[in-house]
Amino acid sequence: MQTAVAGRRRFAAAVERYLVLVSDPRSGTVAPSGDGAREQEAPDERLNRELIELLNELRVALPGAQVLFAFLLTVPFSDRFQDLTGSQRAFYFAAFVGTTIATGLFMAPTAYHRIRFREGDKERMLRTSNRFAIVGIGFLALSVTMAVVLTADLLFGLATAAMIGLVTFAFLVWVWFAIPVARKVRDEDGRA
Image 1 (cartoon, rainbow, N blue to C red):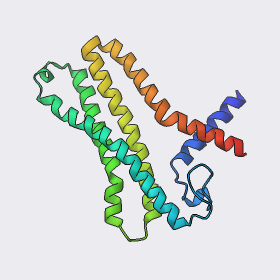
Image 2 (image 1 turned 30 degrees about the vertical axis):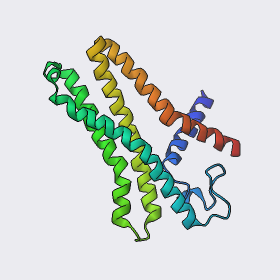
Image 3 (image 1 turned 60 degrees about the vertical axis):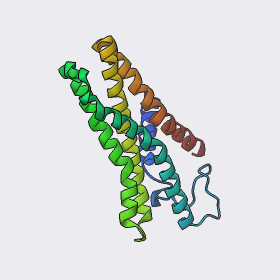
């Protein structure tokens, strides 16, 4: 029991640190090994590299959110949309709103950068943008799950759709969040 509680505490601490960038003052002045940083890398160089890495990651996530958003925009204009039940419309709307939020969060770092360009705010911009990206991934996971539930409900009924939705959500949480956070916990335990 005590080991389980200690494990949960370490996992929760890792999740909190997961939302903090390497260049955050709480992480120290030297980047941990394995993030691609060179020991001679200056703080400004690391900030620039981290910004480029973040923007490259968003270039992968944003098109997926935009494709789902575009598809969801067309659904109400199809002939079968009128046949949806109230719960199916709720799943559709949840997926639509979640995808809208995810898209907004994935695009927020670009707007932030453009508005604060050359104002010496890169560290704060990276911290904020990192959080936007992580929360955006969470909303995308929810939206994909809702879209899968709606599709499965139309094909197989609500009971099967609920089961498929739970499996889908668990899978996305596992691959997008649990694996990296668990690895972070293992890495930190290895250093302690």
